[in-house]
Image (cartoon, rainbow, N blue to C red; front, side, top):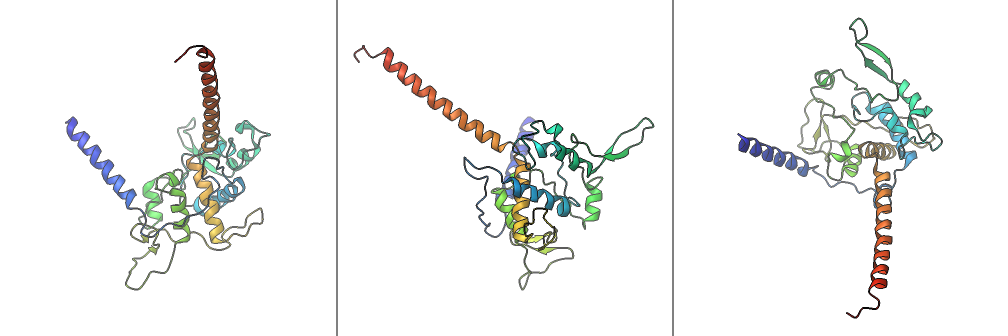
Length: 264
């Protein structure tokens, strides 16, 4: 029995790995992201705009179930404010939370009820369940976006390439009802219609909302959502490297001092 379970686990891992490795059909666009490299950091202004794109364009279909409102104001997050190091006291997090309606309960009568969101809540799903989501999207289940850039190889470039990759289907390619052509998607046929159009949102900072700009901003935001502790991790890594370097110098100096009068 255990051998069968182990064999099944190996097979499942192989199939899943093969599906991811298959990846998109076309070559991905290579963007010079601010968060790349050992010193990379998130572009906070871009991530804030990306949150606006998610809220006004994506949130109607796609959930962000692993992100809480207070995460938006944590250290390294798009709306972090050093004047409010405790994200629970950040007024931006509270204001954003109140923009959403959250289902809660049961109450004293056993009924569920709706209330304004609070910062400890996670982003509410746009649909009550997967069946409702599929019924509203022609049978396709919109994926959760919390870990989207970590679910694919070169996920940030993949997401950006997908968002800007919609094209008219070439001659000989037939699309069924509700499908769009996107060579960046595996199989080139995708159930999601092009989500971005020039001017889809009106950025509060005055940035021109082109498809390319919105795709980059949304990717920046979702990359942060998938790896919110990246900046702290890199900072800790460099501190550890510096500590080890200093320790190595001290140990070498101690070695020379202890053995200076001993012939080797």
